[in-house]
Length: 110
Length: 118
Image 1 (cartoon, each protein chain N blue to C red):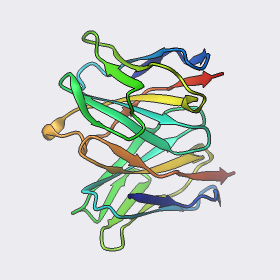
Image 2 (image 1 turned 45 degrees about the vertical axis):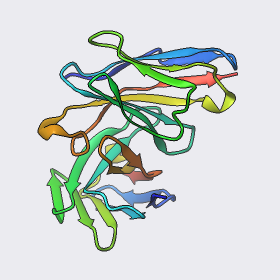
Image 3 (image 1 turned 90 degrees about the vertical axis):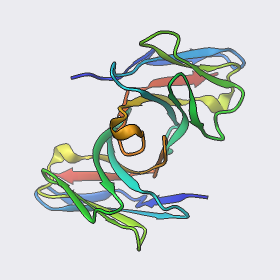
């Protein structure tokens, strides 16, 4: 069955540093991979989508890479701010489904 | 900015009772979804809906669950006979179909309905 792994431990970093979150998957060959942000008690909010033929995608302070050989995506937030503190979810796109990882909590301290 | 809305925000019910969770997707979207998230666990896909029929469903979405688009704006999830393990946050989502598919379009999630089964 499909398996998506994200670091279960929270990532603590200082404001201004770059946060790097990892998403690994097995038994799956997605054409698209998406990243979402989730705040406590709220619904996921879309951040970025990357296609299998794209190695890298950027949006403002966010950068996503997608390595289909390694079956891994990396999500970077540069110049992190306390407001970036949240859980970040990796999701693999099926035809009309999203399969989510459990997410990694990011804590940015001032 | 358009958003997905869900009602109620919190529903408490007795085991064995029927519940209907309601959603209003973004008006020009064509794909609709239900997900659930048990406390402390990952967001899980339940069902997708397109052109007035179910497009895909997960193993969780058994005969106790049904979805309906009763009019041009609402999208509902019905659980016929609730169980304790149905307690979770239920999220509705919608997406556009730019290019003809759902899988490369971002999904817009509602704020969720917290269902508590006693």
